[in-house]
Image 1 (cartoon, rainbow, N blue to C red):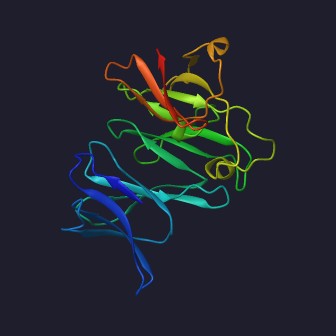
Image 2: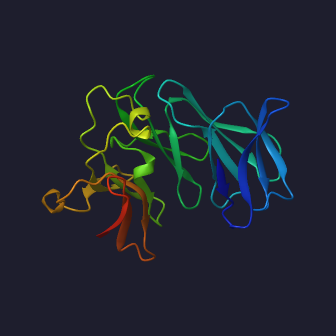
Length: 229
């Protein structure tokens, strides 16, 4: 797992030492030089994301419905780890643009069949379920740091373990597209149902600079699509 620093000039990566059998989170120049160990890691597979407008990087074990997700951060210069959140299963995270809130998708229970979308502040507090059963990989934050655009997955097979079966590509979804105000919980379609004429399993959502167009990759055919907002 590798992630770029927000400034784009350094990288974060997980390192496994085959001699000591220990894993660590590190920061270095893109060519691997000037590296510094930031934290020890207990998990084999992790996700890494720098917290925007902060001096810290967050990391967590890859989402698995059968395992508790431990969400932590550590300063970029190294130092004491901070546990932001635990107690959720199969969780994944997406920071807003200023690092004040984080979007969370998680299983409804250990080994659960349903996915839930929630939000919390940067300390893990103010936790709130948004009642929108989707994954953070199908969402993007808007510039106001309050509204999000998400693809809501349909045609999830009965009995599917979420998010495991989706992440293992055991099925494709048929998505609808929504705008959600994370403060009020208000939801609105960004494109009417009758205008969706094909099956879209959306991922890698992003907006143009003035937020008038939503782009996404359709996993069904690997092509880039756009929705005018």
